[in-house]
Length: 244
Image (tube, rainbow, N blue to C red; front, top):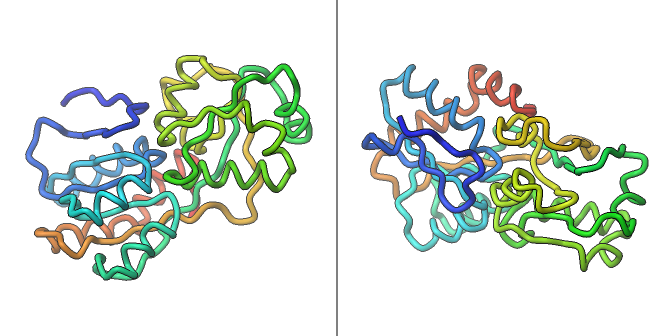
């Protein structure tokens, strides 16, 4: 099986050397845990899965344009709800996990000093995912707005289409700070690179799942959808910082 590079930000194709039974459109921040979920599902049910990872907004648009996806996993509930309202899904969106926004930085700081740290002249570049496409980018912008920081740091912002692209910036060391998803902490490519701070959340960021109505593999797609809510998947997601 070809090696997967987690930080790919356009399309991340898992198990490219096999003919997939279903294609799962996956928010970029979920690419890492989805590798394990895919393997576990295939082993349990003997059905092949292909994972296509990109920004949730990009995938949502592609689905509306007729992309041949069977299941959609978004980093929020909004995009699945858009598809549901347009009657493009088999069911109403349901949250299968909760994610958390984190901040990565080259220099060490802490949550109590973060606001002043981001506004300081020492910080020249701050990477965020494109807020109009990626829920974690929208969450980052909300954090900056709520702390009256957006105007102060606007000139420092460097946008990536998805969390995958933001993680590439981190791996390359080309930004001083980055807002990303908690799963990035567990990526081998980012190990021992800089420092991490989790942004406090009352609950977390709900991640929604739906089966696409146009699927030609409804039985398998529904099976995969139901598997997302199993205890097995909860255990895998927990390994990457997600909660239920």
